[in-house]
Figure 1 (cartoon, protein in one colour):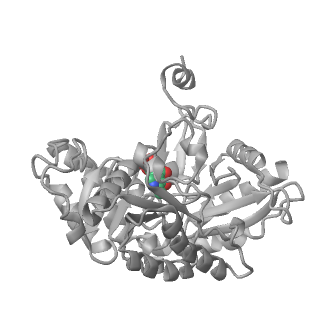
Figure 2 (cartoon, protein in one colour):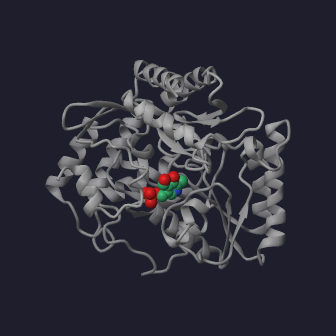
Figure 3 (cartoon, rainbow, N blue to C red):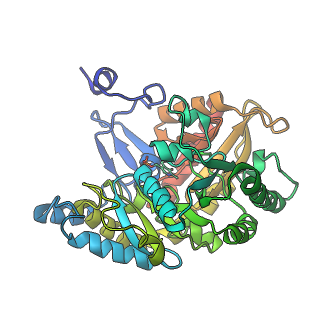
Length: 427
Ligand code: PLP
């Protein structure tokens, strides 16, 4: 049996249909290599994870050295050195007064813990999340996810979650001519959400500062300018879910920095350790200290090897100025993408992004904005045949996502854009 056949027979995955028929044996830089040597240019980074490039030597060496010393001790029963060092580093590089991190293994675990901590800090129990959001696949994180496609089959979800409209100018029911006005109206509507959908016991508002799975939705700064005073007025904590947008992806270490956000709690995962499993939620001291002894633990959380890999990844990001590079490369890519020609078969509705977190929303016609989900799926397959791998996202599945390793070269990005145009032509 080959790998694909074994997947079909023995792996419990609901994603078989959506999975790409690519068997990855090795990864180097921006490339995946199959056992027969076929090479793909990876423009998705394992869903926005491998920010420092596949097989990054510095990260691998740090992990190997730690592996020789200690693989596991349970970091909440005994003190592990890399975890303490990483917690200190995160306090230094995250915005505002964020200081104390709880470490877990994956994004959902981090968001789940953040929600719990917000309840304990505020003594309240409701949440507000955004339509089009995605926060993970556990019960609580799906409860604050604004996408029925992800939630189907898992309900009923936890009560006490209200949804506010995403600042998604292109498709917002509040859309005005000026995107800044749309953003302001979406934010102001949060007051109405609190007043009409909650019992005024809202612990936290959870937001992805740049929304990933929802199709790379980038809020205008006006959104937060209007939102923050509302949260303050109602004593609602802000949870920034930076699982996908963190670690230089958007052109800053964290996307919150674009907006001057200082959340009470921030969830991180994905890019933190360049592919080694690790996540965390970091909170300002008085919020973090609302956990009482014994409240929260994870057996594998803060694994020493993953923490050593994270420290090496962050050092690499800082030294190589990955944030600045992502910002410059992203701007260039988006400018070029705006010139994509749909040849009348499929149209580029909108190109959105920050840094190298970029989405191209495809529509059947620019006038009707009818989503071209099926065509976007075919585009991704056509690009794969040309050995470039893209992500797909958005509520309608019509957004091609470009999120390559941040070490990607200009030549590689040229190829990504050339293949996207060639795939459109082939479609
Ligand atoms: N939060 C955001 C913003 C995400 O994009 C994701 C995953 O895509 C998650 C949470 C869940 O992370 P994980 O799949 O590691 O549980």
